Figure 1 (spheres, one colour):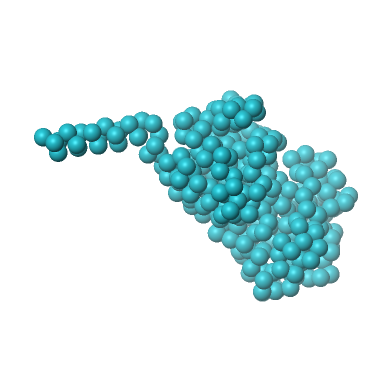
Figure 2 (tube, one colour):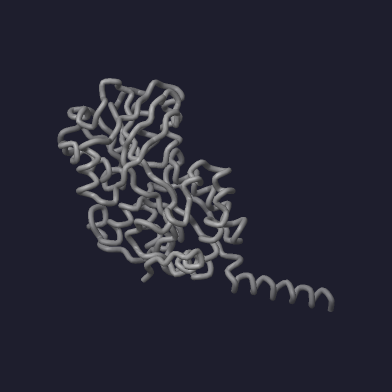
Length: 317
């Protein structure tokens, strides 16, 4: 009889945990294994599990668009995305023209700056204009990186036809640079980015600035870009600060996720910034202000509830 009672109590406890969201499991789409999304996503996943009791399965993907489509298909519940790609999805523009506007996701919060990093091993490439006639990796066709690269090229008076475009991932771009198969590559991620770190560690490489008139025109034409500086010594041999532009890495969640789960995972992240920073340098950019500013899609009600407790009102739908 005691065993039966004990089993019954255990069953009640388990059912209560499920009802309260304590046994929730989510899958998070990130990016390539040599990018910041994947590494930082793993840290966030661990923090969410430890602090909110939600198991997060972090998977490597093709990045922002794949993550949004994965959430729309029900394969993922969380995803890291570029703020500009998120805007395309919500509006049904650019890389989402074929799919049309997608409304199946909501914002949890902005995370950190994603610098547009233009990398080369050719010391003669000093400006964006110097890419004319060169073999340049501009990311997978239709990806966030692709449109960032096109925006930067256009701001410098170039088009895709003015270069020899190569459509490669971060890791493939780094390998192609080392092998002399391309002259430069656009990599959009939070620095230090693993693929670039490895390249600079084993080779003489350079970051090309995106500044001055090019940056001014870019921000005038595309207001979701902001100026950004990559500090000296972010990469081996990079002895000076490099100015560029940035979009924002953003965490999104399925619109169908429960308010309680999303509140708990938002709290797990933004109440534990110090712990996250100790595990990954990008954690230092986490803040309530950064999380809630410049978003181009509505927030999930669970995230909005957390930010309201911090005195910040965000748009929901």
